[in-house]
Image (cartoon, rainbow, N blue to C red; front, side):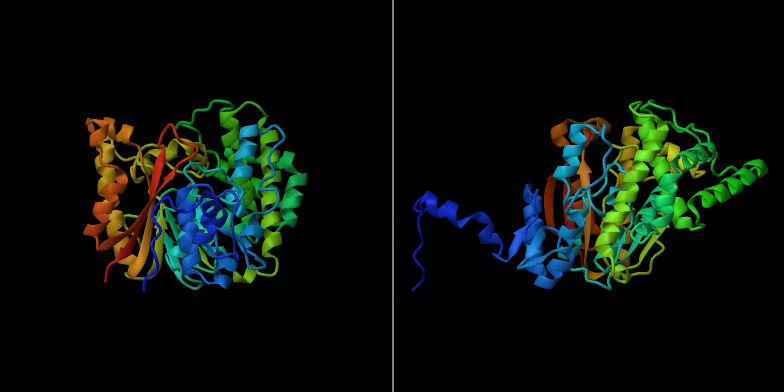
Amino acid sequence: MGSKKIPYGKISTFEVLSDGMFRKLFPETLVLSPQLNEVYELALAYYESKVLNEDELVDNGAYFIQVGNRLTRHYLMCTGDPLLLPAHSSSRLKSFFKNNQFRTGYSTHGLFPYRGKFHPQMVKALINIMGIKPGDTILDPMMGSGTVPIEASFMGINSIGIDTSPFCRFMSQVKCNALIIQQEPLDQALKNAKDLFEFFSRAAGTPAVGSKNRNYELSNYFNCINEEKANFKSDYTERIFELIKTDNTDVFDFLLLAYLDSAGYAERSKRQSPYDKFQAILERYLFVVKKIQYVLKGAESLLAKAVLLQGDARDLKINKSSVDGILFSPPYSFAIDYLANDSFHLNVMGENIYVLKEKMVGLRGKNFKEKYQLYVEDMGKIMSECARVLKPEKFCTIIIGTNDNQLSKALDIPKEEVTGLHKILLDMAVQYNFSPVRTLARQISGIANTMRNEYIIILQRDL
């Protein structure tokens, strides 16, 4: 005899509330991460609890802080002060990092605040849900600030990160290297921050303080090809090495990233002098390194290999059926001009901004309509390449935002007739031998005036 069905409305309020929703989804042995307050996060946590065993949840779980009587590695990375913020930081900024401590304000993700960056916690969960295990290889063909390679390294998963922008490749490499970078030279650098700042200012140039507006016309000092400048650069490099008492290039790159970060702040605000900004950011960077290396102590050898390259997602130099998973976020169409944001940094690196613009997905084209058409065309090539390099029956996850107002203007059609970019990608995926598995929506914070929602699209490569 089957169990008797209870009609709706026949269960008491006490019974409903005392039973609890979480216990219906998760066993009592699992303690959920604090600050989990969105539906997509709850869904990802549920999927993690179903596909990972207890040991895997402890080592690599994203949305749990305790499994039985064991604290998770994610909790250990996140606990304590998230970032060393300057005293003058706004209450809004302090609140953001406090409220997002388990989402994004941990590990070397805290180095350099890059627009449109992934939530690392979400990335970790997606890697788990896609069934990627230690020893496998994951690809991010548009890696931006390197969130996927960093998370994969912690999880024992090899990664390949590719980006068209040389600055993104540089920034991502510094963040990965910082996991095991030498601390002593960084302490020495902080003691000599004033001299370091002056050297970097002479060699790399200085931003327009408080301009709040980057352009493509900044002068390039750092990679000048004439003999006089080349000699200066060589001499300058030697002086830097003398100050920090090492010729370790990873340390040099780390300090350069801190300077570029401070230059970005100087462009946006006059609240502090450029030097004060540099010193504060260097202190924050050192805090980040010491905190994550404390957690990693004794387990450095378990970090997986990350290969980071400058390249084109439309033409991947990767063998057919060679990666175990793909996870990436295309540029937010033409909602964010990444070159304008990075123009100072790219000029420092000797990059011709106008040449690079013609290679950037979402920036090619003379007007909105042409940019949209080229964007869709480029995404088709990227989907084709993803299908080529991904192993059969493995998963490709894409996180993409949609701005219906912008698309309405670009296509000159009413907003209600706009087909969101996520729907276009879903239709495109079927053409390239992918089967849609799950789509989750999440709200975007930080660029709500540009885009309010993005979608997590999980696809499986057909046989």
